[in-house]
Image 1 (cartoon, rainbow, N blue to C red):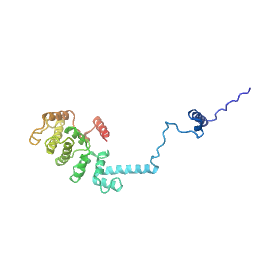
Image 2: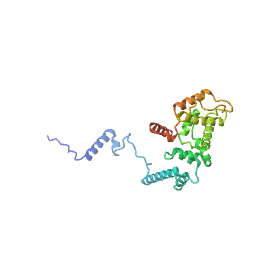
Image 3: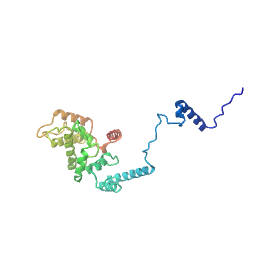
Image 4: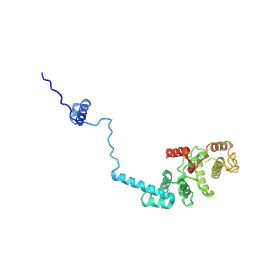
Length: 261
């Protein structure tokens, strides 16, 4: 008796098609197979919200303009902001919250320029909103200061440093149910932390034992236990300003910044 032989599959495409047909026949009921192959249950569908080619071109163009604006801002803050406004990357007139977000979330900006911009008396309303973006709840004042100073570099002039620390101290007290006697006491302690950090980690300065805060808490002394904790923390771990970060310290600093964003 003659036995019919199966014709060999001529090409890879036909082979794949035959496998697909076999899979459908095994997994589908007879009524389902009449409607043709269906997607497997675990098969992902393509999103309908993918950007178009024109959208991608615009995003790339805006990113280039944003970088140019940031470079201009580092050279001249007014020119940089004006450039971003002219290219519809910032609102006109400027929105305070928008500027704060730009300063905090933009890694292209020079930390020194940010400090100079925030400490400018004309930008006090921006500084007020900027400080409020930090959550210092249940954080000791020196640790809160570390977080605060990781975002910008303190300017060199004492009056400008005072402006930045005054707003910091008031906000820190508000986050912690108003400890210490008043805002002036918190400001004095914050300033003492800066001085202690300089004294402890500058070889040209005689090292002090505790922050110089005698009778600064509304004519009373601060708690000695708290001062000791602050002293030990700053002595063992320097508060390093952004421009002082190098090597492994810089990598750790950038990693912490990225985690915070």
